[in-house]
Amino acid sequence: MSPTIACVVPCHNEEAAIGKVVRDLRAALPEAEIYVYDNASTDRTVEVARAAGAIIREERRKGKGNVIRRAFADVDADALLIIDGDDTYDASRAREMVDLLFEGPYDQVLGVRRETVDGAYRTGHAVGNKLLTGAVRSLFGNDVTDMLSGYRVFSRRFVKSFPALSRQFETETEMTVHALILRLPTAEIPVDFKDRPAGSESKLRTYRDGWRILRVILNLARRERPSLVHTAVAGLLALLAIVLGIPVILDYVSTGTVPRFPTAILAAAIMSTAALVLLVGYILESLMYMRQEQSRLVHLAYPAPERSPRRIEPAPAPVSPAPAPSATPGPDADGGPVPTPEISTST
Image (cartoon, rainbow, N blue to C red):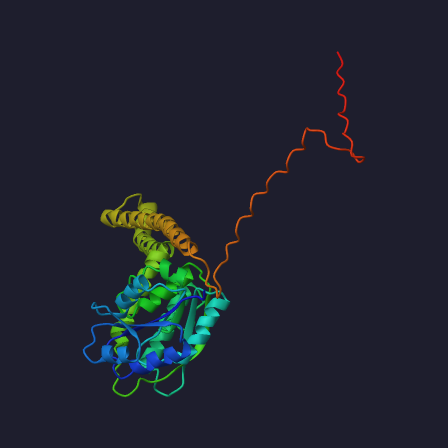
């Protein structure tokens, strides 16, 4: 039995491009099931996708993150590919990406965007991607080149261990950090990236969505690196307390009195707060490890992706014991009876 492959294409008003995306995926992966998730489109996206042979699903809550959350819950496959429905990614590389997932085996294969047409990758998007990717690399690990790529292939165990909490375009950031935190095996393939076809409009807003992604990175850092965040905050508070407290200490050493009593109380309170913040960070770090252990156990509950199904060797049949020798005397070599040996007993 061959492994199952599914393609998920999130769409919002992609009438001009979705037909070609579905046909290109069908040519590259003829055995795959192609799901087009319509995300509150107001044009003919659904009709065009259905005419091209896609399976239509709907997610009325707007946002790519909501679509991914729904698709990961509904679609069950050994390899699940996601690609945007705007025809900016080279869908003909889908076969190569899926094959690499099985050959690794990997839990994620990422299509790293390579611009083939000038202007396909807007300057603001390119700069923002580099800055945000650099922030993730600094906080969580260096094993990522294009954090915001929407062209990926996942194993079943990645999909089933991924919480999918984001609502909008920040879902790619969440996927990347999930793989980095659990240290899941990931491979990258450069893929061509071109401009949208005529009549198609980008839904990504450089500043608005960039700020949203940055907030997600900071929240993920707070959740996944609590000791680092709380140590930084506690250090700033401790530094402030020291700056406020040094003049008070110098006055006490020189005069034996504390003329700045309110400042002394404030410095002591800030230093106590810094100690509490640091303690809370270490407690959250322990809880984070427990949560990561649970995610890891869910991940390990599923087998690694492979081309051929696992064969379970049947248990060996039980061996019957050899029959006991008969007590009845049999014939000897000459055909006569075999004499029974005498058993002597001593008293």
